[in-house]
Picture 1: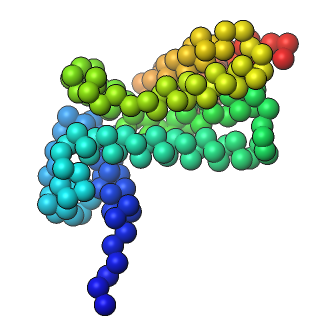
Picture 2: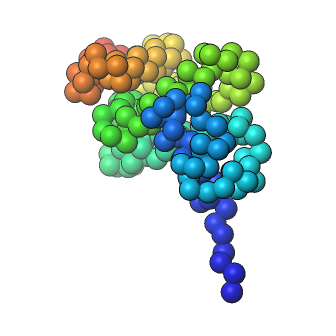
Length: 194
């Protein structure tokens, strides 16, 4: 009897190989051949699932966003259902900070994608994703529910702060504990009196 192939699992495995390369070396060095070697599969199999390098990049970026979504859901589920807006925003932003080895790997891979978009603006424009925008809208919805002034601008600012703190952790300027303290200070200000 022929072995059944889980195509979604195989695609995720190949995209995971790209993300490991991105995290360790950057995406500029990630050829289809290198991804195949990292995944332990043939180049032909990589090309079967991802016809071009751009498809592979976008597929891996989608999986990276899914992984962040899982981290957020895990933190939110620990709060009970539904969590109050302040806890929702806090735990969502803390899930995005690289405070553990998995978070660091993910943040380094995200940084590699940003690096490619900065180095090749055409690629960045042609393959822009809406993952950050969706996260920003989600935060704004919670801020609106908490009756925070200017929820859209506040959500954008909090997400920008979290991205900056992520860079400061990856660059060694702050450790995770210090970055979390900065984030919590700003959240205290946002939710003052609420």
